[in-house]
Image (cartoon, rainbow, N blue to C red; front, side, top):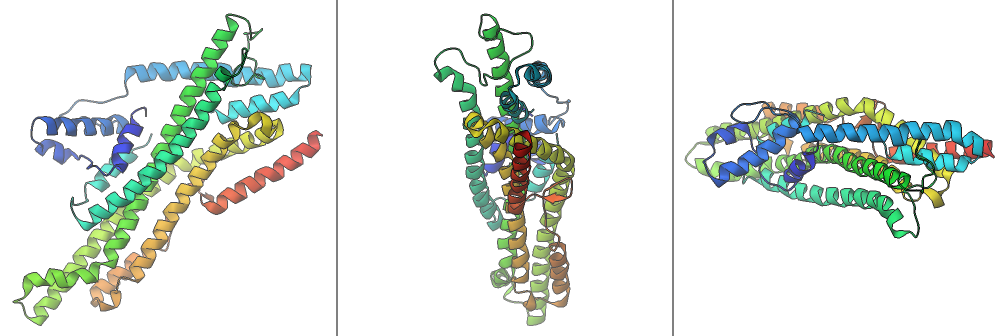
Length: 408
């Protein structure tokens, strides 16, 4: 998991992805080293085998780092928070601080065979073709979009992490939180220990969250780019036939009709092949995420409620991070839906009325397959799109107003 951002950035940069066949046929020297580096990133993430044999796993330091992080996180943001809310707060009666502490804990909360599927799909793209050029163009747009979102997430998280350093005196990322067993918190060495524990948890939480969001965002974005490139391909099928037939000027009209039909059939077959791969890729991602997305949205809803109850003046750095997770998911899902709609419209506008009966039937089947939109969902019930953003926060605000009245 710790390697996936580097590999995925290669994916959206438009560089060639390396297949196993390319590795076996590659020349020696610098080119082979480049292939090895690209393939190593992919096999590390997908837990496959290295080219040439040998098993591949996650680096041992990564396991150690993860174990240390989980221990610190459970101690600081699970055990200490439960103790603070259940034991300490009833004694002091400071429920606002309890809500602030809960919002910090919930907002900071801590794979798939998808990369192999992306590699297989990308290996079908012919380098130098119009499809390759359009795909590269859309991937560059995706890269810019991804860098903007990930930069926002990192900046917001690290501003929260560095906030104590720019304030006078001794402060923590959240002064209301009391770590169990480290009272008084502001005295040495309790202050140094608590600061190290909280900073480590927040740093790795930010890093892990951006990694997971990157995987989802770029995988779905790759499918979006494929669909948009396929849209351009199917719109140009009939317009490309005259250029193709220039190679057969000596043929008779009946023979040219057969050649034209075979050319259109071949292009449609390639488009269908890509479309099927994209459907399988999105289905795999949605199946892997739909259950955890339900839990994630429940946690985000709880985080939003506690942030509002704790006061925006106290949780202004928590809220953008929490809200961004919902917005990014729904934005990604909506862009996927938009790409499906664009592809569907392109099929109907591909001048299919000029095709022969066999190719017309192929277009009809392809059009039927596009009637079911490719979507991301939470639990297979809540479709992630722009409407989901409004519905989700409308529900959160309704619950907040109700709870604020009850607590008063």
